[in-house]
Image (tube, rainbow, N blue to C red):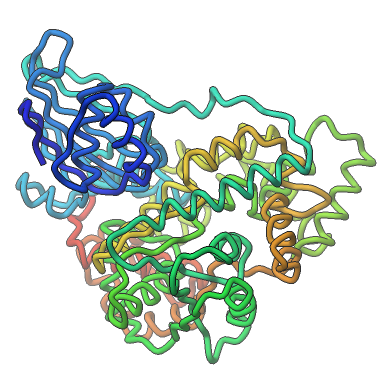
Amino acid sequence: MADGKGRIIVYNGEIFNWVEIRAELEAAGYSFVTQSDAEVLLAAWDRWGAACVEHFNGIWAFVLFDPEGSARGGPLLVFCRDRFGIKPLYLIRDKGMVAFCSEIKPLLLACNRNARINPGALVQQLLFESQSAPARTLYEEVEEVSPATLSCWSIDDQKWQTIRYWNPEAISMIKRTDARALEEFSWLIEDATSIRLRADVEVALTLSGGIDSSAIAMALAGENHGDIKAFTSRFRTALDLDETGWSALAARKAGIKQIFVDVEDIDLDAEERLLSRHMETMYTSFSQLVNWVVIKAIKTQTDIKVLLNGQGGDEIFLGYERYYVPHILNPDRSALSWLREWWLSAMHSKLSMLRLLGFLVYFSADEFRRQRYARNGRAYLQDWLLKYAEDGSVDRLISDKRLLTIQETCGPQLQRLLRFDDRISAAFGMEGRPVFLDHRMVEFGISLEGTHKIRDGWTKYIIRRYLDKKGLPEIAWRKNKLGFPAPTREWTASLLKIRGEELQKNAFMRSVLRQGLDIQALTDQQISTILRLHSAAKEIQWEPVVAPA
């Protein structure tokens, strides 16, 4: 889209509050000819310049050409992503040339580049499941625009400037009573849900039996939002993974029509290959394959294009069990307080006291964890690759809950999950909208005292209180949530049976796996890693990695 001043924008995403921004711009004298948020974005840039993004509530990646954008009046090319990197944007820069795309494969093709993998980035992702720097990707020549930034390229002088437009570290803690915290959270989740229903197409919800998606369902309850549908994965044979009973309880309470997707009834080999092809990187667990099957079913059985989801709730409000470690081991605690929190955390989670003690030891020993990951890699990776693991890092769990929330929400933990979600939904021409990643919700979460996040051993305490208030105490206070389960052992065994002979025939795999490797002697986790690595290498046609001279 272009405006009357020669500006051109390429835009992917949604600005959910574009209606309010448009009204503000109209009051300032701007006029519009479409009902497009892209037109609003261009007008906002004209009025506020780089500061326009501070007004946006949404998910976006855009590239904007401004013929008079720089301080000296020269042409400017601006690359920008939303605050949390929900929408992707990749670059290749070389000798005065810049190419960009929301996907990596077309970018490599357009620039006549091969899929050459950076060995250090590969080991970091294989062993530590993260990337070592915000802009780094697996690919030697491909970088990723960092979230919450404007990367500006002055075309005349070939210089780059990066502007960080959102700074979570500047958000201070605010003391709130229980009543006030719940009131604020209730308004935020209901408004964040409502504003994400703005669309020209039908909007639905992915619903598990967990706290986050159930809270979104209850935020829809009692409102005039039409016949919203909720989609849930179902396991008919692996009943220990099935949570349809919990999700059905939430759907009934919210008055939402629920549709079940049987994720076991698939062509495992074909679907896993397709998933790897669209991921463009190595995905981390078969949970993404479950998500793939659910999204594919929605695409093939309905006309739905937009899906609300609960991504981000665990990071903002500290829902993962590993967060018990900095909570219990806070250096400000007395020995009696330490024991009390250990006992309560075991009572109000699915962890036994012994297993929780193991968590406390494991996640508080960063160097031990790093060495363990490295040892795991020695079982199947070539020795020269393992040298990169020496510089590998694991996330340190900070006892300060404000800083921990920032680390988990704005760091590689959530970035990885958002990348998977976007690639899966985009593969089927759909859009995922994470309700909890409304920037107002995140800012609220950062400013929220830790006692509203973990209390008496209950994680995500504020969300549990919301569900309880909404009449869902059974889900609010459940202790055995599975996360996003998958039949990992069964699928690993099936894929190994199908692909066992070809795993070491692929040129890339020969370049990274130990010679003479007996795959059958490895653990299920190690075999699963090799299978997923093989899929990515074959489907995206990665070049072999070469040991340095």
